[in-house]
Image 1 (cartoon, rainbow, N blue to C red):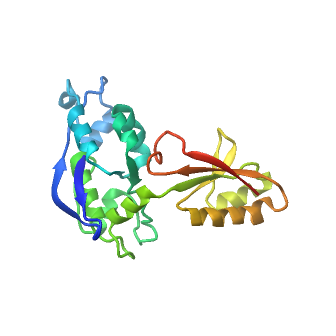
Image 2: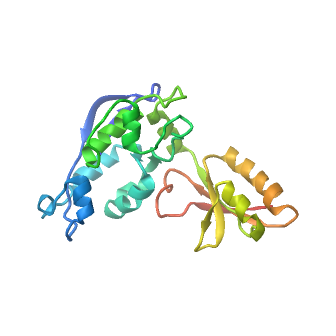
Length: 240
């Protein structure tokens, strides 16, 4: 973990960067693929435990938690350190439109290389420094830094829209528009970054999918406190 102060006016980090790094014995042999990627061996973690007091003290001073692919990190981090559930999160992988910014890939190593910085990835400390380097620069095609964009993302709601009761014949249309199929709930859904996009999508559904049919679609509002966690957002319904 890095604890970084950010100038709200410029979106730039300032002052010292505080670091926490540690190991925790998983209570089982480290899989070979993980050893190959990280270089971390069973001997390095044997008997080790992360310092709860230090982690919680750093977390208490943070306003926003950032991770590159927060949907992967947040659930297991919260299960180990419950305090993370009470902080707003932002995802540097999903909350910045890197494709629109001209990036060929949203992978951290690729984003760093786009800035001319090559590093040995897949170790926690250097990955954190690489991410800070990337986010401290203006996002291409934008005047704001990645840090500015993530602070804004953590403060607004996104929306998961479930096209409840959509007719079977609309499945190809929904899929081509970017909807995904939830096999458990048996419903097509998409995620929208803000209320304006939600309103536009509701209008599109009404015209292109439901037509004269009456339906109640489900909307799940996800703010920074629950987004990327395993916890649900606030649910509501909207008539079509």
